[in-house]
Every structure is written in structure tokens, then in C-alpha cells.
Length: 212
Ligand code: ADP
Ligand code: 2DT
Ligand code: MG
Image (cartoon, rainbow, N blue to C red; front, side):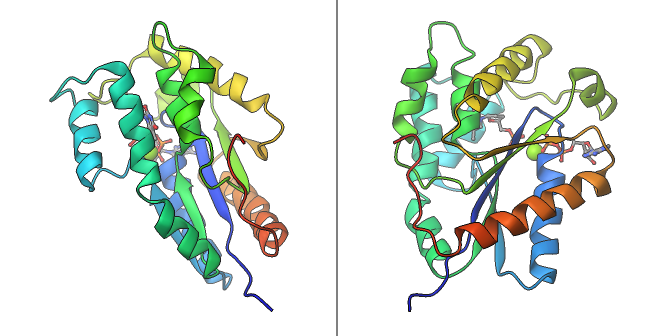
């Protein structure tokens, strides 16, 4: 019998919703429960493509809007062989942002539609679970101000929130909405429960293809 695979679990949500905090805690908790688990993040700024993205986000270089969109997607595709290998070897991956961020952010720019923005990511490994951390802009504001990166403004983040809502209408993706205005521990417990169920459900299923 083939070995059991790991699950692909993605965290999405607005700036300061707690994605990075919860992703770290989730990896540790799942490991403690005996699941082989590793964390990933997108953008992955350490690769050559990731360095171009980092420089764009930090406003150190300007890139044409289609170009940066395709670079974000390429930054996922370059990790796909590794992602598949790990999932197939039984490792669960907890991912801080994925293609949904890619689409929500670029489609919030002038003259970009959701359909065009999704195309480069069609066929990526499909997440078994997408945890959407929902927080109001008011609550997010209590968690500190914006940094200096390119998308960190109220007006842009409002558009991004609307695009996420449109993406969540897609029932082919296993979205779970979590109230991320609760304290860190409560959010964590919910994410852990949902993740353990997803790991159990995914273990003998083939890896799916996103948006196909
Ligand atoms: P994101 O990765 O979604 O932008 P972070 O995990 O970096 O968010 O969290 C942003 C800030 O908010 C950090 O200072 C973090 O400690 C704090 N934080 C995260 N989750 C909560 C929570 N549930 N309640 C209060 N503060 C939180
Ligand atoms: P953080 O490193 O703080 O999460 O910010 N983004 C991300 C895109 O525009 N497209 C993408 O495909 C991805 C993964 C969201 C990273 C910033 O980059 C944006 C915020
Ligand atoms: Mg983060």
C-alpha cells in the first residue's frame, strides 16, 4: 500500500489578521501531536525570484503590474516539486499565504479582473484546507500600524478584502472562516482542530489541482 500523504493547509487573511503568528503555532502544535509538519510562506523572499519580489514590496524597485503578478506566481511554481515531494512523503505543509493572496492583491489594482489573475496559478497543488482569518480593519489597527511596504494602505486593503470575499464564494475550495479577533490561543485551538480533520480527510486522497 502506498504511504499516506500529508495535507496542504493554507492561511489567508488581511494584514495583521495573525497569519504568521498562527502558522508558526500551528506547525509546532501539529508536530507535538505527532504529525510531521513544516511551514512555508509566500512570497518566499530568499529565492532569486523572491528577491525581485522583496525589492518590489519594499519599494526599492518598480515592476510593471502584470510582471510582478507573474513573478509571485512563479515564486509558487518554483516550489511545486518540493511541495509535492513533501506531501507525498507524508509531511503536512502549513503555508502562510498562497495563490488567493496573489489574486486578491493584483485584482485590486486598476484594470485587472479576477479571471485573468487566476490563470497563472491554475493547476497548482490544491490546498486541502484554506483557513481564512477574518478580522475587521478596526481590530487590525489595534495590532499596530501599517509597515512601509507597497500594499500597506487602508484604501488598498479595503479592495483586497472585497476580492477575498469573491474568492470565498468558490465552493470548489475548502474555505474555513475563523474569527481572528479572538485571542491568540482561541484562534489557535480552532485552527488546530480544523487542521487535524483536514489531515485525516486528505491522507488517502490524491493531491488536487487548484482552479481546474
Ligand atoms: P499577519 O501575518 O496576518 O500580518 P501577524 O501574525 O504578523 O499577522 O500578527 C500581527 C500582530 O498582531 C503581531 O504583533 C501579533 O503578535 C499580533 N496578533 C496576532 N494575532 C493576534 C490576536 N489574536 N490578538 C491580538 N494580537 C494578535
Ligand atoms: P507578507 O510577507 O507580510 O505576508 O506580505 N502578495 C502576496 C501578493 O501581492 N501576491 C502574492 O501572490 C502573495 C503571496 C500580500 C506580502 C505581501 O505580498 C502580497 C502582502
Ligand atoms: Mg505575516
